[in-house]
Length: 284
Image 1 (tube, rainbow, N blue to C red):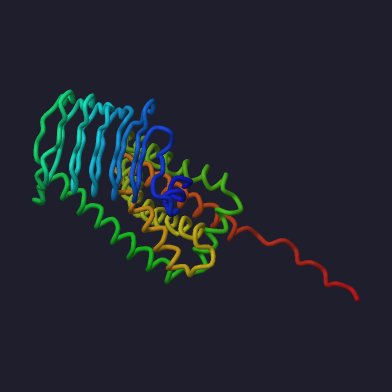
Image 2 (cartoon, rainbow, N blue to C red; image 1 turned 90 degrees about the horizontal axis):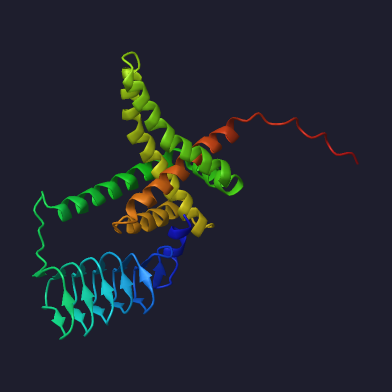
């Protein structure tokens, strides 16, 4: 959740923890004596002077390896790749428009191939894009319907997160991990097969509702005074942008669903908790 809040801020380049450099807009620079796992920029150039353990990707910008080392692939979808003298790339160079500029003394361990856009229905890129679009649209529709049917309930979820973040995280992690384990255990026994199948079938809608609740809470934390629909749309925008990052999508989904499920449990418990005795009227 903290990472999502950080990426929602206008700062151009932000680190994914201490081991990766990710920028939604603006340049990414890996300085000398710096080692990261990935270097990714969605709209900006990437400069590597240090060491990248895995891949370097620039969706809209140039990639320049200035004497640094990249153990994985270097990809520029809408830009050019420059390898200065002393640059080392262990994997492939993937480019789309202009052929990479490789200086004398630079080394490439893999191939130097033009990147082909394979958009057939069975290509990995097209499937991932269609899955992302389907997830975004379905979450949007489900969120609008739930907010329309249960407007005050969503504010109760946000209040549950503000008042009890610890129990929310605990219950969310328990449901996210415990329900699949319980379903698998039930499937082992012949008598429990119907229960196990029912639990597995219930996980998808339950996780979908938790995903909607988690995105709303994120949007409400950023826009405290905005309307419910605006807060949900803001949270959905942030989460779905993060879902485009290959090594962040699973982590973000787990955190959002866990927080959403936890707030559902804590919010329902608070709503059903018996009220205390009314205070006696004040005397004159």
